[in-house]
Every structure is written in C-alpha cells, then in structure tokens.
Image (cartoon, rainbow, N blue to C red; front, side, top):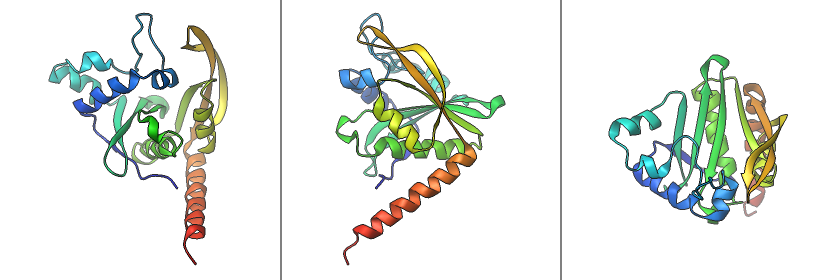
Amino acid sequence: MYPQVALSTVEREDVQRVSEWLADRDINTSWYGLGDDGQPLHIGYSPQQILQASTTEWSQIFENADRKIYSIHSPEGEHVGEGHLVIEWSLQEAQLFILIGRKDLWHLHYGTAALMRMLDEVFTNLELHRAWVVVPEYNEHALQMFRHLGFVLEGHLRRTHRKDNDWYDSFAMGLLTDEYSRRRARLLANEELTNEAEQPQ
C-alpha cells in the first residue's frame, strides 16, 4: 500500500533538514556523494549557502519556473524528502530527482509514492510529454522503483557518478505520458485488489 505523500513549497527548516540528512554517509552515497572538499554534494542549490541567502536569492532558487523544487511530506505531515523537476519547456520534458532523507522510511514505498506525485505534476498539472531520470548503476533499489513505474532504459552513460573515489556508470530511463497513465491505472487497481484481499471476511 502506497503512503499518501504530499508535495509542498520548500521552507527554510526543510533545507536545514536536507543538510542534516546529507551529512549521513548512507544518504549522501545514494544521492551525489562528497565533493573534493569532503562536503556532501547537492543539486540545484547548496543547503549551507541558501540558508544564509537573502529573500531575493531564495526566490531565485525556489520560485524558478524551469526548476521546480518540492518538499515531500508523509501522511502525518512530516518532512521526509525533496523532489526536483528540471523542465525543458521547448521539448515538453522534465528530468526528475527524488531524495527520501528519512532512512527509517526507506523500502516502505515512500519513494514510489513520491515519484507518482511528481509524475502527476509532470503529466497532469504541467501537461508535459516526457519524464526522464539518470540512475547510478549501484542504486539497484532506485532502478527497481523506476522500472516498477514503467520507465524504459534509453541509454547507458559512462562514469557519471562518483562513490568512494571510484566512478560508476549510470542509466538514462524515460517515461511518456500515455505510458504513465496506463501504468498508474494498473498500479492503483492492483493496490485496490490488495486492500480488498486484506479486509477481514
């Protein structure tokens, strides 16, 4: 059963949590690892720098029509992750990034639920044609999640992600709007059948 996660505007306390999450080796390794200075890497902005930013600088990052950044919340309203959409409007496509920073929620379908909410944004709210991701070869759980949602392998990228001072290949995967609508309907139908089977007789 998928948790009913929600997407919301990023607040400063959310960025502080992202910074704390990335200090954990397991989390930053599954994300983008460490830079040459030994500090965790993040995409789109630097958590440490943006926490000191002016209102104008904050708006430039979090009110950007070409890069939409969301905080991900659990059904109880707790901040559990962050999602990014990098949009190429002329091509009607968006690249997705999702981080679940609460390790105690890993492997409990929060990533899948957040991905579905992000895809709803891409295909329903923004009415784009295509979504795509780049996943390092060592992140098998993420690869399985994207396959589960219908993403198709589109390319093999060499030595794009660094982990423990070694470079790893990654996979480009894509999903089209009509493919998602069919897969989403099947997933929700299967979930309803599972819920009915679990009801006491």
